[in-house]
Amino acid sequence: MMARVAPHPTWWAMIRASARKVQIYRTGMAFWLLRSMLELFLIRVVWSAVYGDRESVDLIADDTLLVYLTISAVQVYILPNIIAVEVGERIETGQVATDLIRPFSFLKQMIAIQFGSTLGIAPVLMLVIPAAMLVGSLEWPSAANGVAYLVSFGLAYLVSTLTWLLVGLGGFWVINIGGLRALLSVASGFLSGALIPIWFMPDALRIVVQLLPFQAMTFLPASIFSGQVSGTAIIGPLLVQLAWIAILSWLIGWAWGRAQRKLVIQGG
Amino acid sequence: MRLAALSWDLVTASIRGQMQYRFNFLIDVAFGLVFSSIGFVFIWVVLGRFEGIGGWTLGEVALLYGMRLTSHGLWTVNFSQLFAIDRIVRDGQFDRMLIRPMPMMLQLMFGQFRIATLGDLLGGVVILGIALTQVPVDWSAGKVALLAAALAGGAMLDGAFQLGPAAMTFRTLQSMPLRGLFDDIFGRFSGYPTSIFDRGSRFLLMWIVPVAFVAWVPATVLLDRTDELPFPGWLAWWSPLLGALAITLAAWLFVRESRHYQSSGS
Image (cartoon, rainbow over all chains, first blue to last red; front, side, top):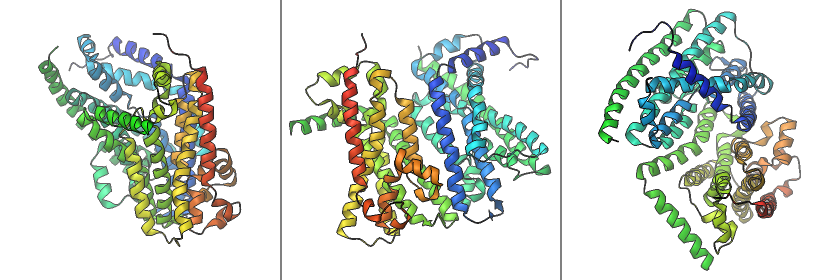
């Protein structure tokens, strides 16, 4: 790949088109917001009831946990996985042939679509934050943690984009990845630590979770936001996220090389 | 009798159809199982760590979860086609249900059978079975009958809040967002003891969208905890009737609204 100083203008065109496309589904988004509020509310009720009168369990304070779970849930809403749907559908319908002819790398096209769709739904996503403060439990972190969180969230966004792009590329081998994607997206709620923080998981489960990229999408940034990790210890999670970005980029490059040959073998 | 045979033919044809794509078929069943049990894994891990929730033990919450998932499974196994009602109405596929010599409602029930829905039922029965060995129920003939009636009643109540909103599809061509919302509310809120909620939410969950009646209300009878209810305990014995009433209303609404169906010209 050639290093460019300024992004190719095609990026902006594709991002804009994709942003416009997602704004068609306005009613769906309103209901989605309502459903996310219900979830945030249930999180607060259930965990408050589980904690009961105790102030902290395993050194995790009641408040810290609720902030952790609320920001995790918010992140799950924001983090992208549309890219897997897009790649999957293009392969299934054969549209991928047209995409490949375009003078702009297929992978870049897909990433641009993902960025655009996030921007398109950004106005609704912005509403989730006040909603979370209303029905959930959201408290702002300290300045240092806040800045570190923004960096960590940016990295989480990249990890998520790359992971789902990789899942989507699986479509070159099995044609229909709809089921696999749905399965993974349900499991990822668990594997990312969004449902239960990794602190509370049994050892066996914790090891599995720490070997997968999903924790780099939710658990790591959320534990910075909630103040469970602070000071110089913040470097650790950030490095893990960077490592995942490197590993996933390499895997995508490798899979993409094989996928192109695979497509040639299928012919026409 | 002839209708039963016809229904059976429709269901088996649909299963054969789905078996053609073997890999997808397996993933579908796996998805159904994972999707329906992940909520329970959550409860299991959390309550294994903490002692219980609002005075309910892990076994007792598992009973609630098993009851609600079995009810949900009983509903979705029979009405999985309703999930696609928006498309059926929009594309004019509903024409077929009107002209074939079989009652429309039966065709809606048996015209398609989605294998993934078996995951809900299977997961529910397994969790319910395990939970029943963990809770101290003082069994009597009446309680056995109540459990069976509660599962059916829960299925009907859950279903009423799908079939009812589905009726609006004939006018608006879209009911998915509303059905999804109710599906979410039933799925998320019916597996917990309603007593953990504050007054306002408890009122909503009992009398506005009555998810409390799917599992919590009948379970208080089974577990002799009716003192948690805001009404006399003997009334809770009749809670399954609410489901029957709700589904009757929903079915009436659905059939009535189906008169507004306008086929899509093609």
